[in-house]
Image (cartoon, rainbow, N blue to C red):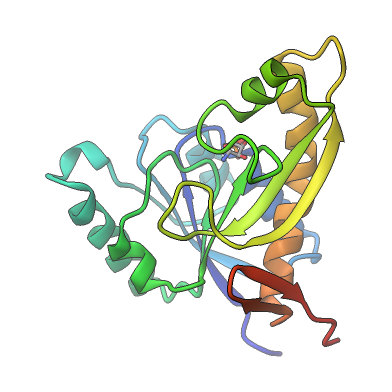
Length: 206
Ligand code: GRF
């Protein structure tokens, strides 16, 4: 059997995307293994999820570091010592510095709860409701030096209903997040993602 793609998952909170990755691995639809979960927040519920599934985890409080670069250097050290191939940001509320980006070129993915380039940054679902768009969704992308600007891998759209609140829209989007994030990771694992500038093409090489 070919070596499984080794993931390092970075979280800050609930970790429902982490859970969907775990579930897809356990049911065999995602051929990868999570080597380490790292949270900058000691109270993240995602840590409980990792523990329940016997996945190693580490809390790394960013407040214990004198700057973002030092924090990222320690992340790199932990990820490399776990032989991580692909870094998965799953609700990780820190902006990465070049220290981490350079250590994993085109090997860091993020999921964002809007159809980028619309509504980058925080509170995307509220931004979408307030703006009055009729369609929103989620985006899996490679991470670059900007905020939510990296090459787009997969997107999924959902309707925005007249009576939606930030919460109801977020719940509808989250269901799609849980579907497409494992899919994007599997495409990476299959070697099916070809990057051409800022375009990601999905090759059918099966
Ligand atoms: C998700 O909406 C994700 O798109 C955003 O942060 C949220 C994390 O949710 N980046 P969870 O921690 O995976 O439940």
